[in-house]
Length: 266
Ligand SMILES: NC(=O)c1ccc[n+]([C@@H]2O[C@H](COP(=O)([O-])OP(=O)(O)OC[C@H]3O[C@@H](n4cnc5c(N)ncnc54)[C@H](OP(=O)(O)O)[C@@H]3O)[C@@H](O)[C@H]2O)c1
Figure 1 (cartoon, rainbow, N blue to C red):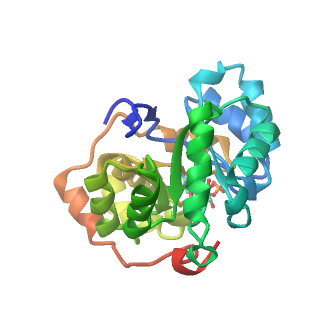
Figure 2: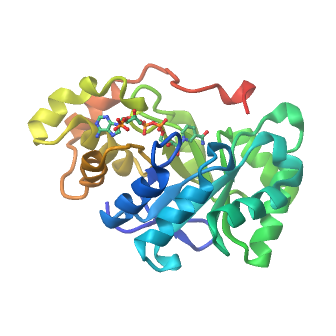
């Protein structure tokens, strides 16, 4: 597993990034993550931390183009998604977003197609480099393509060993849409389930789970407040899982969400 993941639009996204939902010190944690090698930062208008995330980016001293920044448009802004993304940009203190996602389809609103159209417009203006979605199913993605003539480049969904999303991953692969795992550690509720694999490899359970995401071809955005865990979670490039390890993790599937069901949320 090396290099960034190619996107349908010709760009590429880092495989591993920092999730920022509910961080206690978003600016400090973003700065620390960038210092330890992370180059993908995931935020959202709904997280209420975009200004602090922007502060962390500036404190890092890295070139703007060295870091991939994603934000998201919340359900109540789908009808004016372009304006919402511009407000995010202002709070972040940036002049360009790498990726903007529709946070949840919220199909009962009947607005996600319009939101996607507006975000493609921003992309055409150069304000946003790539447009993706989050928590969408395959039929919703097909509807975007049918009505807007383009697919989103990425679908960020809940994915971890207890919710492996096999059917959705196959559907996304068939469409060339990158899958990005949210709550990739399953919120650390059941890391003990991979203890035996971790012990055999001389790694931590979180490292085994994150390596599994990389090896199934997903991008993952684990979150932690703790500097030592930032390093731990990023230390997954120099080992590999065996076919037996993959089989052991495949057996952990429970169809169990830690977060809301996209059919009725957002
Ligand atoms: N698109 C969406 O709808 C959506 C929904 C949910 C989340 N997300 C994104 O996904 C990101 C990650 O999801 P998440 O925060 O829900 O869950 P997660 O990354 O699966 O788990 C975070 C939890 O795991 C703990 N943890 C982190 N590293 C660890 C390690 N090495 N060993 C043991 N425990 C560890 C953290 O505690 P400590 O902080 O104490 O280390 C925290 O409690 C979010 O921050 C957000 O950016 C997106």
